[in-house]
Image (spheres, one colour):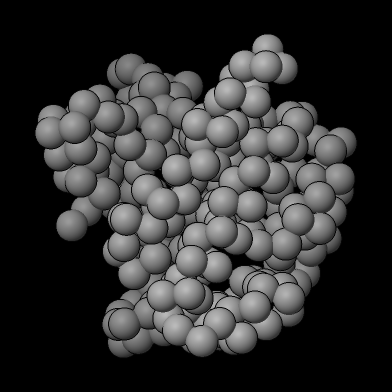
Length: 256
């Protein structure tokens, strides 16, 4: 299902706004413009502009990727629509009203390149960032230190609860840019049952959520359901009331 249709259903049935992914892999420039104008007409305002992974990494390796532009070019393009200009710079007779976000990977093996692109996305008009899932506090700290000189925009940490030792090993060894620390993988491997491994994965996710809550540069977190298990998301969120009471004692808020 296309993300716009899912966003419409979520708004109609649940009364919540969505952040819709727009991926350079899947559309040429004309298709991207058509989609974006359609989203604006539907009242969809929140966009996450991403380049997208090559199809060969997924379940349809024979699919053709487009990549007319990358995420930086897409952010520029969307902000042009917000100013009332199409992809060729001509007026469109109005202005879109998008809030444009971008992705980042603090664990990227070419870290300086990722930091540079972070700055380029802000310059292009990125208004907030979602990180790839994180498990190592040092990775997050290093990335936030290296990007501290850029204009500050809201930063949200990605959290993906680990489902098992096998799941952790796959993410660490097979998914580009993902790092699961040795001590966490060792804890999972030593747990005798899958249920115990799942509990460790939930606790690690809670620890990451706690880190996100305490860091002054982090404005919130978003949680992936592992293998479609939304119960795992709810289990991670069980820790939120603790944050709420602590924040009230300090006179602050809770995790967004």
